[in-house]
Image (cartoon, rainbow, N blue to C red; front, side):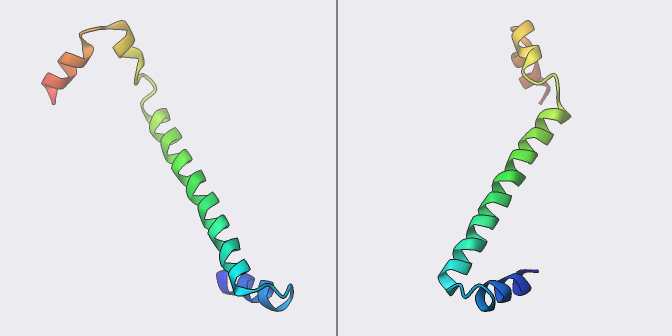
Length: 68
């Protein structure tokens, strides 16, 4: 896909190699941001009580640290 798209951008649209590199850099950056955001949401969904217990039980953190 990478090669075919780069070839098409270069020959069909007459893009310079700098423009093609910038195109792929933007695509890679956008996908990386989506991946990192998804990982954070996945971690948050995996532990839905995270942050809730600390607010209701003030000594929860101390007990949790002792268990580690």
